[in-house]
Image (cartoon, rainbow, N blue to C red; front, side, top):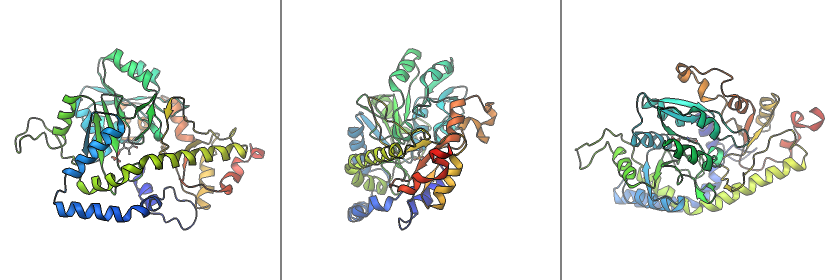
Length: 384
Ligand SMILES: *Cc1c(COP(=O)(O)O)cnc(C)c1O
């Protein structure tokens, strides 16, 4: 996701219009608890890892229904650590969606392995299991489904592909904390789950942070080592790891916020249902592709994303900008077409559903935008 836009969105005051994201509304009532929690960290002198991080790891493991949770510096690092723990390296291939945030694929490339891009299911925007199956080779070392926008990928089919091929699944759950597939939580189904606490995520810190989850004791031990330079005991290194500690300030803020997460998720669901009802009321549901929570899944609505077909997306976006209604395109270009991945040899048309999604998707602000949003010319049935 575009950091400068997100940073700006997070700072936009809620005076006029509808900001893309209004964090002040969520944080206002918690200011005193934040201050107390941060003061406690200062007094303790534990700034990296330590008891606040341990508490968060335990709470998140419980929340996500997984045995181990290991805090790290960001969601991007969580993905990198996951692939390091699986010993992905040069000559290996890792299957990822092209329609996702950059970090899903950059973790693969940074380890010298090749990202292999799969297309998406147009109904959910998530990686297409049949496509994944077709991309397996003797070099495939991992598959990374992304639970995009807050809805789990088709995990039954993906777990089947993974089991049959003996290739581990790493869930990119950065946008999907608390999401469920058949009652199982995001991050608890694959060998490893990866979370982000970037401020725009459903559980956001006051800066960067991340978490890796796993049910496997050996992998957990390895992940704990890898985040501290493979060091144990002090100054003795059994693995070449990285510095990816979660700091105590972030954990302290997140420990204050986690107990509210389910209530916030309910509010997101109510907003999503309300948007959908308004689109139906206005008769726009035939012109705009509306997002749907699929059966047996708990969608946590990190983003409410519609499809605006027939090349009218950008026109609508300009109208929204004039009306001071925040919107964003997640994502405008598939990763297979990014300049830094041109060396992989993909061409436009290789992943048709990804290309179509990049041309059609639009995410809107988290507050109700009001009737003007629905009155735009480009959306009016008369104009169809
Ligand atoms: C945000 C995000 C990441 C990276 O998380 P950071 O904490 O920003 O490094 C990875 N994957 C997806 C799908 C994301 O949305």
